[in-house]
Image 1 (tube, helix red, strand yellow):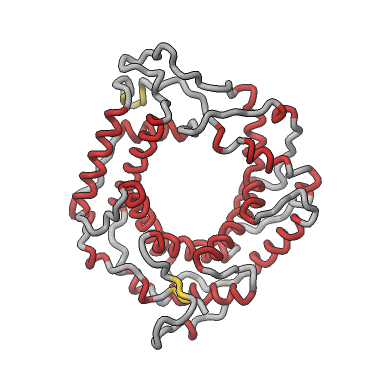
Image 2 (spheres, helix red, strand yellow; image 1 turned 180 degrees about the horizontal axis):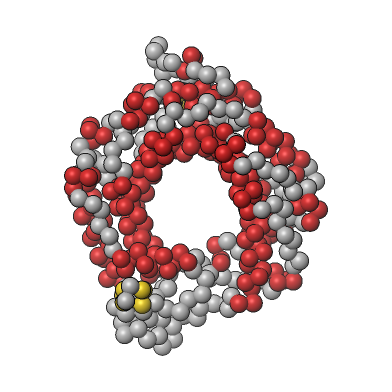
Length: 362
């Protein structure tokens, strides 16, 4: 049947004793934020990059569609996977698409209950963002990203080598990055593009996903706010090793502030904000190892010109696909809530008052 169960929603804000806004804003740490941005721009920390010489010799084809279109296609198959995993409804199957419509309809019926959960999310998001920066810096320190910088800002003698120079590989990296969305589509769909039937199977799935119709969300901005807040709390719990919700916000904030101070102390003294800019950082080139590696290159090589010619599709705009505008949002909310407790989606009525049976059939 499918129902966004009214009995599985989190307790309202007032019940958990938290008023983040009453305890002041979340702390900020400019150095950690700047270092986090510097690391992200260089795809660090990451394992050492070991490109293979024959990657340069491969004649990499152009992608079959513009980046926006390939992003929509990837979004479609990713939304299908999320609905199957979290909502247990495959939108490519008409009967299960009808179940998904019931889930959306019953979620709309919970709007009043969900509004009671809609406390000020910004302090939680800011606190989770700072804690993310702490974790990133700690991982970078553990990966010895800063080993070549002394406290005076000079390189250490015998500092670790930066790895393979990127300059000769920039064109190849850009070519593989352009094909990465299609590689991801194949991975999500578990397709082997060396099989001539793979493109036909993908086309059949996409046709079904394009046909999905769903009720409109009664309050989409509310759901997006709840997803953001729930995800922020889930990230804090995963990092801190404990659920922060039973504790006063000020206590959680103090714990993250301590972690931030400890992480900042791990950085060389030369790393600082000077004249509004980050100074004292090591000389590091981008490391594409997380994206352009043996596994990705092997998959990208299956995208031959013949395969890509068959993938030169006209893809609808994002806003014209209910599975993206509605289904993906509902799956994201259910996944976020499940990460902190029970999955709110039930497949069968939980009591005699269940209203799923009266919900839309799509």
